Image 1 (cartoon, rainbow, N blue to C red):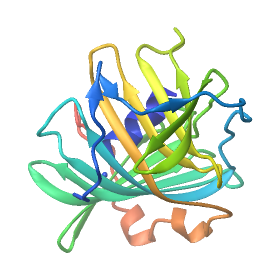
Image 2: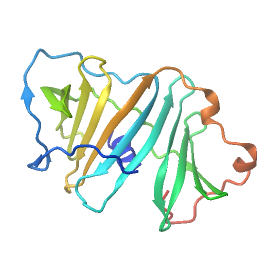
Image 3: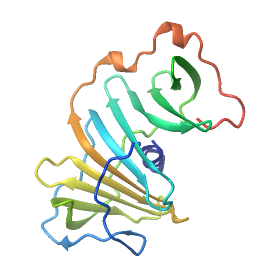
Length: 218
């Protein structure tokens, strides 16, 4: 669970989004206790547009990325701009679970660099079975359901906000034991089968993929 949250958090260009007031380490929204809705279940296939902000570091920046997943083929993909080697690059990550391989592609101008490694975790779709319903909240004048995971299963705290009408994810918040705080907001979420071509790498690029150098941060 923590792996996907950190992946979401570190993976997002600047978009003007109203920042909630921070109190006691996390945003302070108004709450209204209501009847408990069904626990969120992540769809088997979807695409999403996400903005992630590092709230624990004023210079941590804001990242914009697209996330794709299709359980039928057991493959996922993330596209976005990222700082890498002191430059801003377009990075694509493709997870091929049947082969157990992660492909990381970095595009700088007309150059593409590809690295492969073993997929670091088997869990790339969130599991909310340990989340507890908190109540209704209002974020950016939208009513949302708030769920929280403060269990000892993972260090830190995790908060999930779902739209009350569409029952789609609206925001993730993570706060780890070291005070590292990430806010990831979903600006678009479409459930449905994804085009298999999204998870294919052109042969000319795939032939050039290498294992990353030692101590290399993908």
